[in-house]
Image (cartoon, rainbow, N blue to C red; front, side, top):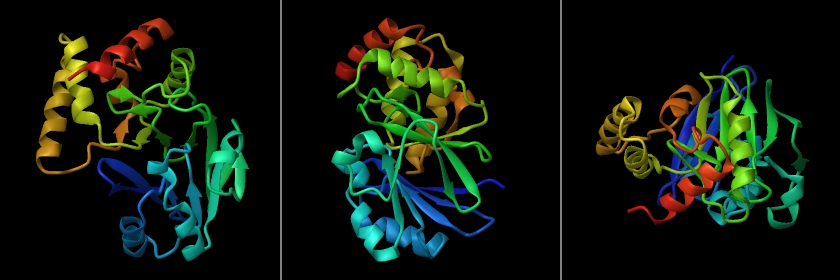
Length: 242
């Protein structure tokens, strides 16, 4: 059975993600960085918290992890390679490991580029990918620590996953990413259609996420980059695009 998945708007433009396994009722949250909205979501959707999944070490993805662990007794999961700059980990994971949320299993995928120790969590039965700041809708993360080669390889790994997989990323950047996609790929009808849909959602203050990987294949210039050099050029241009 598919996970129940709900984006939780936090901070200025972040999303934490609430997950519930419908078989056991086990609940998790991905990248919690603000306590109050997440506690409200837990009360509304599950009433418990069993697992806290961390994708990378930035404060806007981990700041509430310790508070939530203390309040609910949840186990904190994160990359073993980044354990020195994450909250204390109850479960330290590496590429290819399996982690459970009740009866739902996730595969850990190393996805460096934004940061060196970034990981993503793929739940194949749903299917859904919680990818932090590696892949955004119509964009990708800035290369703060990693290289364009690493980001390209990470995006290739994601691109190999199923078309119907839900992309659950860490920020509501889709509108600005869509403007950039229109700039670099103006003849792409799918990009124009996605831009229209995103504008309508944001006009109603609604999330543009999750989005399917198939939609991203059609509209995301970074996912469509032919090699690391092309991705690097796009990323440099996006960094100064206004």
